[in-house]
Image (cartoon, rainbow, N blue to C red; front, side, top):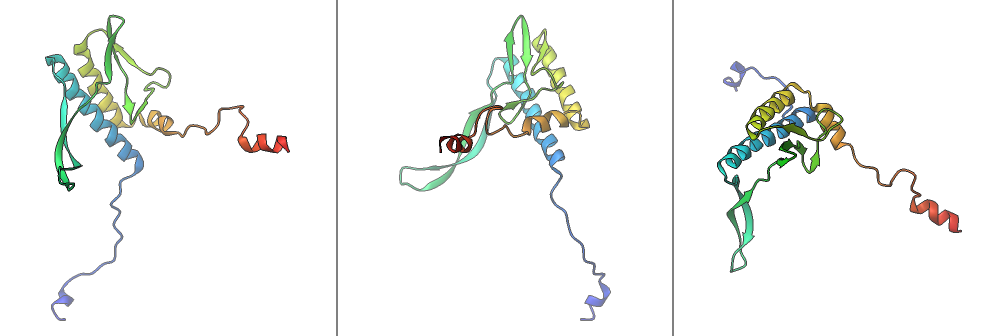
Length: 156
């Protein structure tokens, strides 16, 4: 007991979870950096392949952990004599400026600069509003459409 008296004890609560806004920024930055790698491979004429773990059943019916490859799809495409870049958050497309859903560049070499600018803007928090707008849940019913409960009340 005498050895414990030499120590200093304090009670503290530790907050390990980062805020949602920072987590969203980090998620988008990781995907933008991944798109930079996709662009590098696209210029070389290759597909960007990521290897990750996946649980599968072998011939004996046992679950085993295997390494599976998957191709990352590019967010950019060629049209109208240039390249369009659509920034995605999950499966939804962000409207970065609040109005348009894509960024147009004349040459594919300009896309790397656009991606690095988007990373800087995300780190600065300029895309927080666009991410929040994208994450807003869609309405269950179309505006002006009657809900099924209202229809059943009319039949009675």
